[in-house]
Image (tube, rainbow, N blue to C red; front, side, top):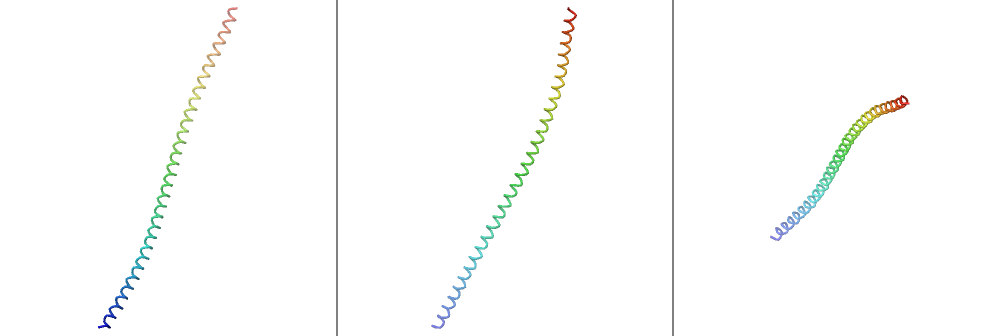
Length: 111
């Protein structure tokens, strides 16, 4: 009987040792998975940041192109207005010259 108890005790110690080793291995696996998960999460986070930066660059470029286009339109309108003003100024200048000449001729005729 004593021998049977001794064998049971040995088997129980072996079982406890196996359980302890299994727990240690499970903890190592768990830590490895946590570390892999953190790495995957970090990579996904960095990928999201990269995509966000690319989108921001694209938006900046498109808004810049829109601004450039708007500037060109404004400049074109300004040039058009300047030409119109120049034409009106020439017409007014010619009218003024005619008025002055008429005034000079009228004065000379009066004398």
